[in-house]
Length: 182
Image (cartoon, rainbow, N blue to C red):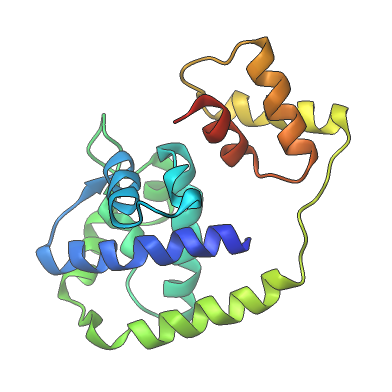
């Protein structure tokens, strides 16, 4: 969990609260695009890609689990299936979670969410980006690519740029997004 992750989660939170109030769902792509629309001047938010949304939602799930609030991440679904991913549905019942989310009074939760972010920021201040050697960065990019489709497929020059960025400690998803302009 990095400062960047927490900034993105902070951008997602009000969107998810509004979805809960409207009893609505949204796709990963729509959530990323809505965050970009609300934060047009934030360079980090501008690099959001749908594939990185799920990991950030797991950070939000940490908050809801720790504070015994319903899990807001159940409101974000896959574009093609219209439902949460298999990893989520193997652990949670998304329909049951949505009933809880829609019935919950979210009006007083913002202060505890803010405290959660501040506590995590204090921890993340102590952690610096991990710089990798070339082979480790290439391996990390390859491992990421095996489990996440990178569309469009990068050419050799683009892969080289991504590897160099990952070597400096940049997150893989961020390096891909910035190089591929997605």
